[in-house]
Image 1: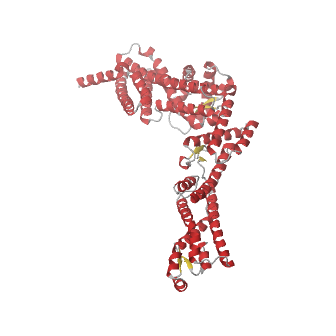
Image 2: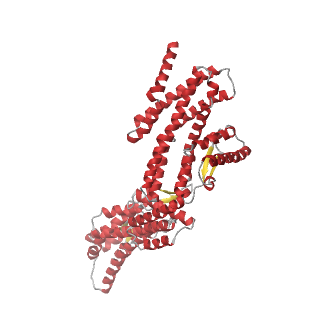
Image 3: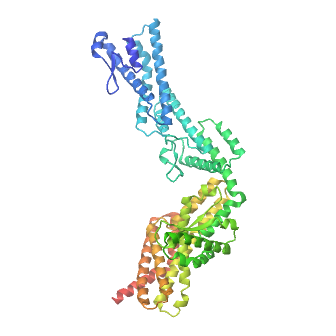
Length: 572
């Protein structure tokens, strides 16, 4: 009977102790009533719980269906704990067989009970783990049980399990930080490749031992290593640093990340500032995408008006793109003081999958010097720059068209001149707001930050903030505002287009219709701006207030709209 009891405690059923469908052991009553007294039965009851827990933990440790680096080391640790307990049972059995100890049920109970709490905690841990998706967050679950136990032996056991998981995380971090490789066959790491083949952070998988800022530093270092490795630009100094880094104990994950981040930030900063690469790229983008050099695109617009005004067939698209590129090169070489090699990095194209005129489909492509195109001027970043470019290009185009109407309007009636002036007032001040109050201000802020740092990651953050603020203050992500700008531009085009055809009949009727549409759009624009102003606070209020001030200085437009409304009511 004693051997049956020891066998059950090791997690194996027998004749006396059988395993039920729910995984719990129970005594076979027919045999127990013959061989055991009532007191022994009561003593055995808590031992049944131990045997059930050991069987449960054995089943978990022997499961071969778990595809997880973290679960694998957790299983190994739990198997080690179970093995140690089974070795204790073996010692008891040997003592009994050798006759050195006359242990009965009570004696076995007294020797085994100290293990009860540990086995119970391990079972609870496994139950919790089974409810989770296997990834590096399993470390947080282990940490929770470790910190809420209070028993030193159990704390030490959980710390050992936590450490083996930490070693897995350490290997994943080292593989990523030093070689730019994701050691992640089962998608458990907090960095992964998205559908666009970009490395991104999954915030839900960041373990408690790492902060969000540390995770971002890990992403930055790995991306940088990938970029450098692709160009085979790792120096002997880099490899020497990697060797030193490997010697840091795995527990010091934060120190490993910090040293990698500092090393890579200095390395990349030296690389991008070498031969003035960074300044050349920034100046090129500022002069073209953000249209600081307005003369370039005034000439370009004049040269390409006939091309971009129409719709394109697939055949015409190829021919027109070639013509646009030639005209862009002519404009850049005429007005931009840059080396020809730098100018030729820029090209103009037309989006084939977008409907509408060429003005709504045109975009610039800039082949920046490596590694700026990989780490700073990414496709998403350049897409944002192109949205700003198209808005500025259309505003510039309308200004030129309105300015060119003065010869045709000198002898016309006041309503026509007034509409032209109002359109010019709004569109010019909108353009000035974007160029002066937004782009120039944010550029000066970014320049100050760059002057104060010798760190690539800090520059990248400064540039990202520069672009985010510009996108926000030009309302790129506010569809109602973009639709309002688009409608204003189309209204102005319609007005200019009437005179381009030398038509005079129906002029006053058209002007009356356009005036009504202009008043509606301005009321909508002011309503949107006032609504955003009331919902904003602090520094976010300033640009909105500045735009309202430019558009409606001394209540020029709002009082004019109100006066027109009063006259209309009076006429009715």
